Image (cartoon, rainbow, N blue to C red; front, side):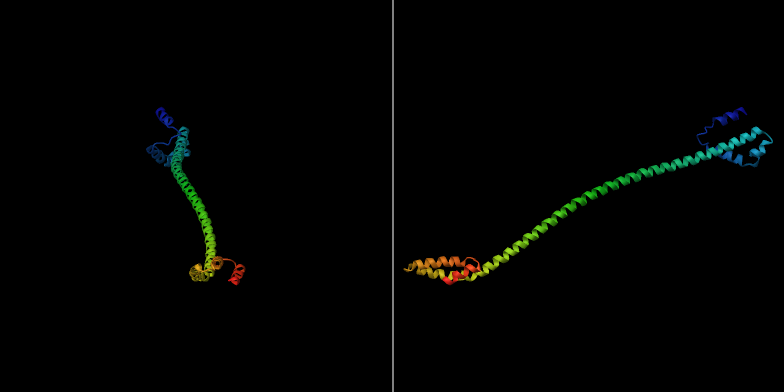
Length: 191
């Protein structure tokens, strides 16, 4: 009796029972002869011991469920750590992607501005080219006329009417330049 009490008292209430002992207690307590109500008539101490063993077995079950929950929480903790690290990696990747996007947007905006500037420059150059082409078209007949008249004037250089030739060359040079229409007409009349 005393030895049984020492064994019972040595069981730590905060730790689960060894598996073999839990199985023995369960098979013992499942027997209809071990219910506290049926033992009370034989011995109140045996009835109380049966209640205590039943309570200790229930405590064992609770401790086992707690251990299972703790282990599953450990698994959840591990999963939480893994998910947290994955989230941090995804956030870092997102930040890198946002920085790249900002860089690309800035480069795109700069490219668009350069393109608009080049288009304006091209448009201006096309207008200048068209104006230069018109001036050359207007001056082309005068140039041909100068090419014909200048050799004749060189031949006439020896003549006493040199001053007339010099004046004519000066007028033709001025006339060959691209003047406005209002200026060209008086020069044409003088010729």
